[in-house]
View 1 (cartoon, helix red, strand yellow):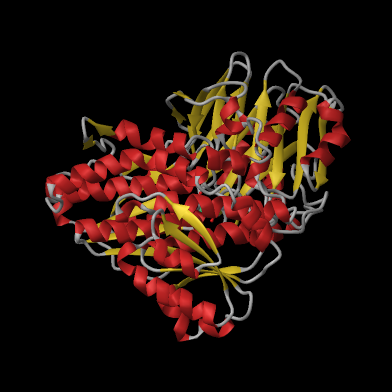
View 2 (cartoon, rainbow, N blue to C red; view 1 turned 180 degrees about the horizontal axis):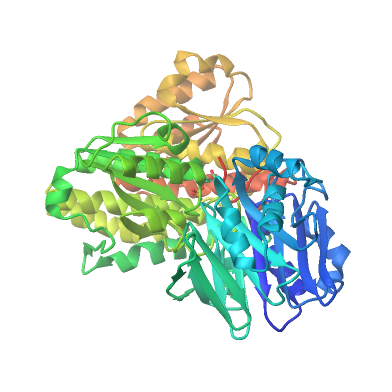
Length: 608
Ligand code: AGP
């Protein structure tokens, strides 16, 4: 996903912008560029590939003069990742430089209109129509030119605008793509997310859709699309730069796997007071809750798999029908949703386009929306009726780990909390589950410590392709996440199958030495899983079983074993996934993959 940064103040802008872009690298990109305003006009440099290519061209920012500027990391949507298509883009008359995150859906019509007016285009991007609209509408007031320009745009945009005639000013505008303002002393910033700002200021303002911000070194003025000045709250970021650094680990992903006990403690403990789950952020009254006749869970990728866990647990405890649906499917299937539907939206970034669209679709049909989000102030957090934050801290690796397990933990807490309020959980069971929820951090730590052979296991399997993950019930949901982790960072093909489905066709693919990872932590279905393991072994598969500590039956049947510490049967999913994360990590490491920034992937997919 693209990232944008902007600065104006009394320091040289280019080095600060370059540093901001480096903090946004984790979002995924394939080119980068910076434009600054010097005494003699706009200076610009851009480069395809990694930021080090840009860094080399501008010598750390030294070759670009000026105290204000904009920067961009591009994740190609329209046009290949080339120097020409990289942002910033200049208007024909050279007065404006522009960076853009998002997609202008009506750019073809706008491009034709501008070409009819004599404008010329150098790149294949949709962005170039925006910078030339700025030229078209500029009559001496930069803010008015931006207002007139954004009024013509359809689709998603986060813009950063620099104007040759307006020294010391940068303007940013947002519609369905995040922008956060950094409030400094004698300097001001904007960026696509807080990680690019927190080294300079912890005072931030979250811009909302349809707003533009006019920044000078002395202050920030925010307008709505009609040009009316808005008052916005300055909020304080609670974490610091170190949280967004590697802390001595080789990869962010490994750091974030190891941070999971702490992330779970931060997420769970503040919400359990004197043995009771307290979800202040959940404003449904008992009466409201009793009127809920369906719960929909929607998300994308790993967040959807966390939602799949939630489906099993919430339905089992609350006895309310629960549907888990991919957001990219839900948004287009004319869903049966009304005021008696509780929609649970799950997202680490809070900016995933399909998830936002599905959420808006269901909200428009009357659903009550509860968001489970990791990024404070993100679009999903701001659109929801209620938000339960996963206090996992910034997650930098593209492959989510602590984001996922804290989402599952919140789902588990929510299920127990709602069941209690619905009177569907006996006190003794409730208190036992609350105790087990509080133990999740130590269980995760133990699931790491009792599997010291994970790296050698991964090395044993690392050259295999077409690895099967099989499981039933909650184990099947864990299979989905385990398989995605492996695919997205090691590029090895694998698939997750409901174990009971194997005999309906897929078992035809089982042959000698085919690796099958069998998740068998669902005690009531253990005998069924034993049969499935025997079925695949009879056809030559090599079985790596994931079993609960002390479960001997399966161990004898498997070629290799991963042990999971025991807890309440409905709460296994958190500890169970951690060895699968490490297995995928070591497989990717054995294959020399770019673990934190896998090819073709972005940390948050803000485009469709
Ligand atoms: C998971 O490792 C991937 N990064 C991806 O599937 C991700 O979970 C998905 O894009 C949803 O992102 P979100 O949680 O930020 O909405």
